[in-house]
Amino acid sequence: MYEDWIANLAVAATTGLAVALCILTHYEGLLGLSRRLAVRVRDQRMKVFYAIVSLLFLHVAEIWIFGIAFWGLLEWPACGALTGRAHPLLDAVYFSAITFSTVGYGDMVPSGPVRLLAGTESLVGLVLITWSASFTYLEMERFWKPRG
Image 1: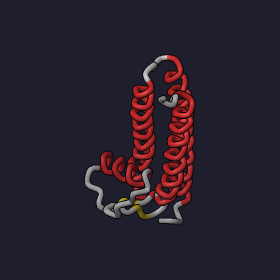
Image 2: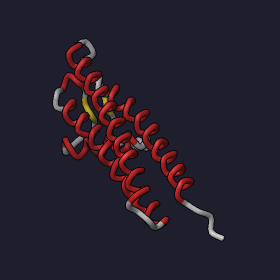
Image 3: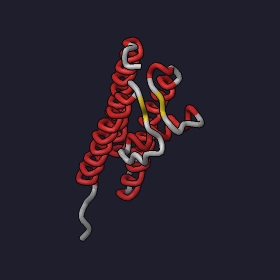
Image 4: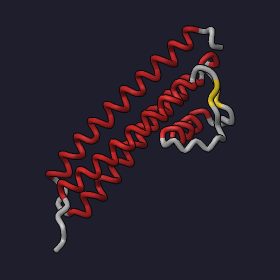
């Protein structure tokens, strides 16, 4: 399994592509959200609500990026396997969600070269979630005025 360099290369390339797509998606999403909050949303509470809902959608999109990457790689047995997988696409997205959020229930376990994608997704998920938390804090500092 590990001797198949084409499979290893496919996993490494897919991992790099998924990471790049997620970072680009997150950057552009935060940039657009920041602009929209400054111009279109007037109420302070609505700004926070709109920001949080938008960030949730952004993270779901990033989970799907990794989920599709898992699904594609797992269709090729040389790239590895995911134990406990019954529905290929939805299970890949579910595994992506628990990996991205670093919950890791343990009901699905990757084996083979695809573990590179799983390990990398955990790190990327942690970074993107903290980036979103920092963004939310900065936006609240920018728009919230103390009551008094």
